[in-house]
Image (cartoon, rainbow, N blue to C red; front, side, top):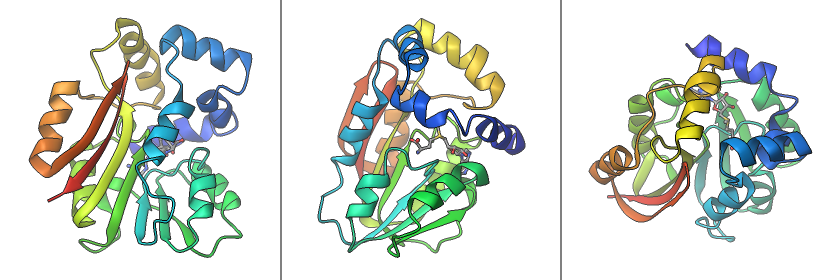
Length: 218
Ligand SMILES: C[S@@+](CC[C@H](N)C(=O)[O-])C[C@H]1O[C@@H](n2cnc3c(N)ncnc32)[C@H](O)[C@@H]1O
C-alpha cells in the first residue's frame, strides 16, 4: 500500500502544484466538475489562519508534500522551529528546495504512522490534505496526538465522505485506485466522534467535501 502511494505521488510530482492551486484551465475544470468548485487555496488560507503570525514554538507539518501552500507562512515564522515530514521523497525534495535558505525549517522523510519524535514534542501539528492519503488513519490520529504537547493544537483539512455523490465517485473510482487517496474515509459524524475522544474542538467547518478544523489536546 505504501509503495502504491509513493508511486502515485512520484508520478504526479510535476503537475501536483498546478492541480491543487488551479494553476491552469484543466485543473480549474477538474475542480469545478468533481469538487463543486471547492478552492484548496481558500481552505489552505483558512487553515493557516489558525496559526498566529508570531508563532514561535515547535511545529510539525505532516505531510508537507511540496509545501505549495505552507512555504510562505513557514518562511515568515523565523522564531519557530518547523519540522516538515513526508513519506514521498519526490514530494519532499520539492519542499526541501523551497526551504534551503531557512535554518528554522527541517525536512525529513518518514511515516505519519510511526513518527520519529518523542511524546509531547510539538505545540502545533498541522496536517493539510493528508488524512485522505494516509494508509493507516487510526495510527495517524494516534501518532499526531502522541507528539503534541498537552494544550497543543491539532489543525487539519482533508476530504470527507458523504457530502457529494460526484466527489465520492471520483475518489472511489479514480483517486483511490491510483493511490492518491486511500480508504476508508470518514464521514463528518465519524470524524467528529474520533476528534471528540482525543481533543477539545475549537472550530470545525465543512466546505462541501472538505473539512477543516482546529482542535486542542486536553
Ligand atoms: C495530497 S498530498 C498533501 C501535501 C500537502 N500537505 C499539500 O496540502 O499540498 C498527500 C501527501 O501525503 C503523503 N503521505 C502519504 N502517506 C503518508 C504517510 N504514511 N506518512 C507521511 N506522508 C504520507 C504523500 O507522500 C503526499 O505528499
